[in-house]
Length: 171
Image 1 (tube, rainbow, N blue to C red):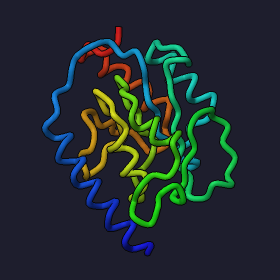
Image 2 (image 1 turned 90 degrees about the horizontal axis):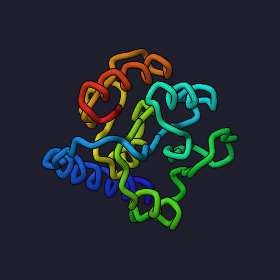
Image 3 (image 1 turned 30 degrees about the vertical axis):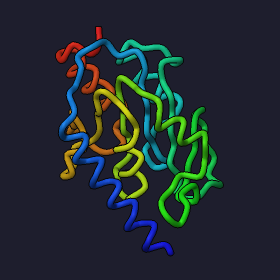
Image 4 (image 1 turned 60 degrees about the vertical axis):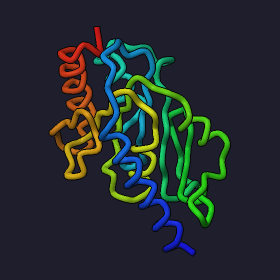
């Protein structure tokens, strides 16, 4: 059953990549931000505050989504927490809170994960965001890819802020 679930998720990922490649990006100021992270992403409360300040946004404009391999890890950041167990055998999301998070529209996605597994890829692609920012990778899933060392959250935030201002998404 595990292979079936991954196969279904991979098909959903490929369809979403195709959809995203045809979407239009609307240049408008960022009002709300979805943040995708995992326990290995080095996104601490202090680093999140730094990124919020770099982007000149308030903490209430951020929604945090944390993906964990196992649901027993401690999470210091508020927000939605998911693990691979939230998927049914046929790739359906069982949690209404997670479905609600994925149904909301965000102006910006900041993805601090390395996209090292199919679940992180799924969530990164299915968060509905006008503009998507993540680390440089070969999959080109983002509108803006930041070329900094993985886990250098402060440098990531500074670089994202610089380019988002140039693009007119931040004031």
